[in-house]
Each structure stands twice: as structure tokens, then as C-alpha cells.
Image (cartoon, rainbow, N blue to C red; front, side, top):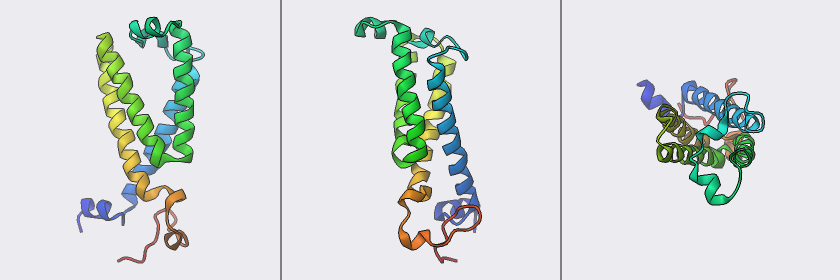
Length: 155
């Protein structure tokens, strides 16, 4: 059997490890970025914001970015609790960031990176339909291999 067939059938540790790596990444990154929106230690976050956004809403750029930080923190916690839902939230959020950067016309390298991250978050959502243990049926939950892949009795 080819590796791609094994991954598609879910009979391989590869897809479990991919799911786990993506889940960790999409918990840590939104939490870190969200928390840093209050401190600007990693970067000066307001510089990434298209100027018309705070003008349109009548708020200071830093205040807006703190609101963004709260949303990112919630999204990161959401990926821990409900990856089948919040992976798509993170993916959509990243697309929104890309649109903001494209409108601003700057930081196009960051926009390109965020396109890749959005695709990764989408992939996490897809994998979560198979590996999110909160949604695995009781008949599959009874026995797990050491690496977390459900044992379904298939050969």
C-alpha cells in the first residue's frame, strides 16, 4: 500500500502526527500573537493594520490591536477545545489578515506567509474530523494505539 493510501485511510501514524503538530502550532501561534498584542514585544503590531480600519471604527490602532489580541487568544484556546470548529476560525482569521495586508499594500511577504498558515489551519480542521477525540464515536474510543490512532479493527 502506498503512503498516500495509508494516510487517506487513516491507518498510518503519519496523519496522526501531522494532526498533532498542526494542533500544537495553531494553539501556540494565536496565543503568542494574541498576548503580544498587549505588549508589542515581538513587533509593533499597529503598523500591520490598514490605516482606514481604526479611522472607520473611531478607535486608536493599538486599541484595535488589543481587540484583535483577545480574538486570537480565544481562537487559540478554541483550537485546544474544539479543533474541528476553531481550526476553520483561525483559517478565516488568517485570510482576513491577508486581505488587510493586501489592502495596505505593504508586508506582502507576511501576507504570503499567512496564506500558507491559513491553508495549514484548514488542513488541521480537515484532520480534526478524524482525530479530534471529543468527536470519535464510542465504538472507536475503547482502544487506542500508543500514538493515539483509533483502532477500528481494519487490516
